[in-house]
Length: 161
Image (cartoon, rainbow, N blue to C red; front, side):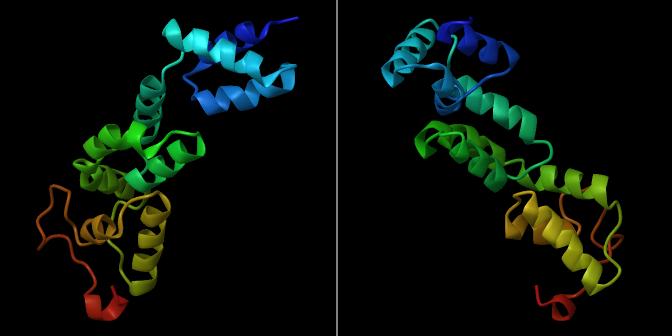
């Protein structure tokens, strides 16, 4: 039978975990919740468990395809506080337009030809967690190498945007 510490190390060897994730995963195997806390305290003291590394890991895995809002939501669900993720997410803000354009280009590759398609493209980027102003800029052709003249967009009067 694997000890709690052994289980925790097994999980951490596969990928970084937040403290709350490990509590949830270890709970069915512990007789006492204090036992879990003791194991996690020891792992944190020894440097095996780190919330900062976990935040960096999630950002590294998700940044290429998701916006800051979606990454923030995922970190919140994993038990990371706003204070713990503030600096890391602030650095993502500066690249949000570039990342949104890259996601848009991989999925669509060309500007919308009608309001319905533009709305579909907008919903896709918004669902990926990109901010509304960033989405509008991507659909207007910003964040790419093309000039505004060679990247036609629909007028705001047609889309209500």
